Length: 279
Image 1 (cartoon, rainbow, N blue to C red):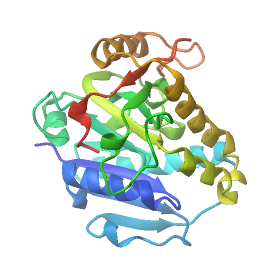
Image 2 (image 1 turned 180 degrees about the vertical axis):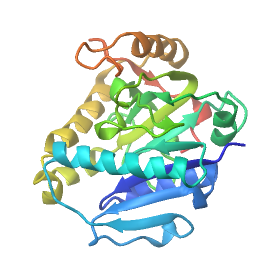
Image 3 (image 1 turned 90 degrees about the vertical axis):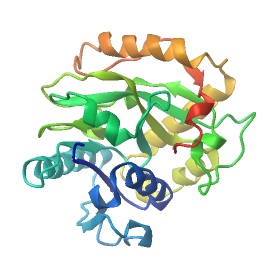
Image 4 (image 1 turned 180 degrees about the horizontal axis):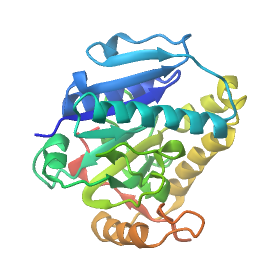
């Protein structure tokens, strides 16, 4: 079995971090989780016990500069884990992102990744889960998310090279690896849950800590995912994920040929029941 770590950085985000620790702790072991808190004014929650959790000095900056610095730091930490700590793979995500192996394939995430030959990185297809306002109520953090949310937008923004096998430099938001291509695995999905509750998004729009650093537009994009999902006719999962995986693999923006790109069409799908207990 390969030795696999997961790494993230958070600020004032215990709701998602609790789920992140629960999920990756189950899949990889809590001792293999590395969490950095953005700011010494943060508190390390009790549920992080057993992980490696550290406070980091915060330098409040506009989101563009902050993201560049954040991913530079996380890239350096991932390199240390690979070169000095004996890890074979490092999974880097935000706290609301979960790399999931399709339950139709037997074995855990660690078992699946251990069987893969990964030269530089591997990606899961990006699944942006959203609240269907006509069918779904307020999210309950104590219940698996996918028992409560059944629809998603298949999004190139979340088709990220999250899992690396050698030191690299992630671009902002983990969206690409500089000077390297990406490779989408047929059985991996990166579920993003930042759009699962409209009330949470509205509350964040009033958070001056986020607004003052230029993150309002990013938060508003999450609300647009909810409205898209609530109005679109959901497509079948199997044929649609196969099609969009092909699109993301081979259609690239001319300004970033090592990133996937959505077409004009918005692909909204219903998530199969087999995923409901995972996250």
